[in-house]
Length: 244
Image (tube, rainbow, N blue to C red; front, side):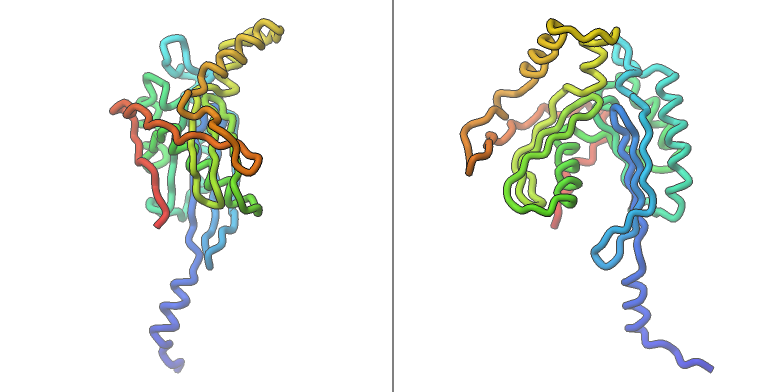
């Protein structure tokens, strides 16, 4: 007959069991899924998937997502769903970005997607998107010191300056590869005149509050971005999650 184990030993073993974590990014161009085990302060990737859904391309002149685009999105999430088996609700985060912020009928897609996934979907603000982008990139960079991270997405572009894991200045601009392609090069023709119009539109999107104000050790410094206007009530926004 085996002797009972020490309760402290059982507690230590339980504490070392891996936790299954997952995140889904409903981007304006692509959807991404990442599943990982977290144990002993380390992440081990279990699954990584991405599909080009192109939500932003499915927005019409009235800002409505068409049915074909919503169907593509739901089919993609149906392929993601099996990889979420074993992931508890509190260890899964699903976020939507620019296209879902802009779409007048985003609630229709969100309700269908939530029913399929069985999990709440957050529509996050641009600067929260920028903050998450920076944290993800910072974990992949070994260098210390001040750094600039730029992410050009399908519907928006995020710019972040930070040090180590702390973002110092965040900006999200309404210009992305899908939206600018549709706006200036919709028929596939690229000309000098069209390129110039796209460049001017990009420059005009840049807020004065984020303009360069000098240099720091040979690098550009930005003024802190001014607070953005409150999001529409229809947005499901959790707000920034700060590290303790």
